[in-house]
Amino acid sequence: MADTRAKLLGVSRLTFEAEISPGMSSREVVDLARLAEQAGFDRLGISDVVFWPDCFVLLGLVARETTRIQLGPMVTNPYSRHPAVMAGIMATLQDASEGRAFLGIGVGAGLEAVGATYPRPVAHLREAITAIRGLLAGDEVDLHGSTLTVARSRMVGPVSPVPVSIGSRSAQVMRLAGEIADTALVGGRFLSAAVADQYRQWIAEGEQRGGRAPGTVEVAPRLTLCVSSDGALARRSVKRYVAHYVDIIRPAELDLDPAWLERVRAALGRSSGWYFDLDRYDDPEIDALISDDLVRHFAVAGTPAECVDLAREALGLGFTSASFNLAAPVRASLYHGLRETLEGSAEVVSALRS
Image 1 (spheres, helix red, strand yellow):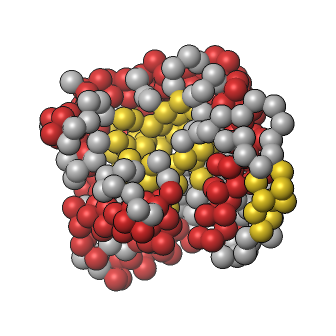
Image 2 (tube, helix red, strand yellow; image 1 turned 45 degrees about the horizontal axis):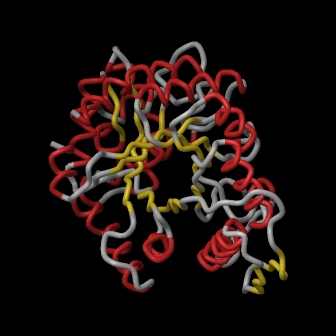
């Protein structure tokens, strides 16, 4: 049992994080945030995606309507906002939430449409976090790095440090997380014992490089969670997402047929929209190509009881935390689908902790 493993590792309580994609009204996002808090999640992230509603405005609104849950972006990047600007945002969120803010940050993705080229990503991420931490500590920061500059400046107004989570699939970024982060978000999507061990090795190498004790960094796998009383609907609703990551990752452990993989790639080419957008178009062949068995390798999807079993399998790989990217069963709207997942998540979280 996951809780038994947590106790053996000296952890008194499993930690669970939920991420909401904000493709809806601000009122609906706030309502979902309340549900996430009621469901027992410890942290709530709101996706920071260009051309989508602004996650930081939404987090400020959520801060006023929640009391316990920690709040942050999932994940932001060091390119779309200068670290000095990000420090001001995080100082404000920390103040508005009365100390419940965290900074989820990574190299970034999806910024090509606004001309981003991600130069020297690991160095840029390191320098950005260094600047943000210094500014939130109230220090005068004088940083002239290889990728950014903050010249002899300090924040005005209330400041307070916030925990930092770094998310990635990259070995280099995971080593950086081991070196400087509070939490490492394992972004591999496909999870197995070998994959989990590889990520932990990268993080441990970073901890050693940073002179930190082994196990300093909380390690949380990123798990897509879709919950419905109709388990078959939940699995169908994430098949496009699974097809996307099957095509990207192509795990050797699954021994996937190359001809079948090409059919998946072709079906994705005939599809349009983002894989979690309910207005997307999924080529019908995706449903035939992606089996329920394959879904379970990439997502926690099904009835609450089925999701408990799948989440326990993931936690059983040696984790005491999990970061759940919430997916919506296909309903009338993204809001209604995510509400269904969150309502079912209360049972999942409670069972995992029992």
